Length: 338
Image (tube, rainbow, N blue to C red):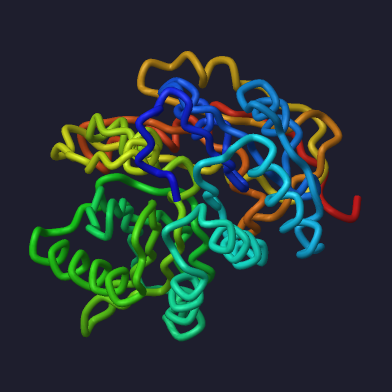
């Protein structure tokens, strides 16, 4: 892997399943980026943004493993790619990593990802157990904890995820125990380079790792960290590939993302998005729907596509501000079956 190239302004990456915010950060750092997605998994607005910021947006069918690997090999050869990095999760991870390893364009062997997959244990964790996610960045085998983020949920009986709060309001000793667990897992796996997103359940007998995946957290968690700490995890991923270790400041405020929790059905009308976007404490918002679009039920991953990001001095204040934004969004949705 040519990750510490002297020609950083010409550093070339092939990113698989990136979001456009990540690609834009790399471009701003002078890195040339090719993006690769399965078109069936790509939202229309994300596709447009990726086409605007990427050197090229490559589309393929991730279920065709041989075709996926052939496209990676051809792209890396044609454009003299330095590093291949998978930015998501799912069935495409191992084929991508295996091809990148064969080509010498990743420092992490496929066995690393297989070991991380083995640790996933979500089915053995009580639904009511509080959860936090831990963002880390590994540079040359050294694991750096960036921050911990708490899940917001609907509460009983379903405990659907409704958003995330950063930093997680945990006492220092609990944070230390969690950090040790996560770093030990990454070390044991042999992970050498890149971001990781680890979910941890807080159980009566101590924290237990639910999953550990080699990518940045989704649901705009990197933006929450940037707002709360003034540290940009997305830019840090690229800096880490070039050998720079992260220096993370303590949080100076709280940041929270809340999903709009729209009911299942067919969207007919909506108002309030413009007012939400210009509210002083709103730091980001997305509403990718248009009249006639189908809205997935709360609890479905697709229901997280619409969200608001707010800042505040306390977790209580950010919770109130998310609730205010949800009230400001007025929708008329025809229920399923009507």
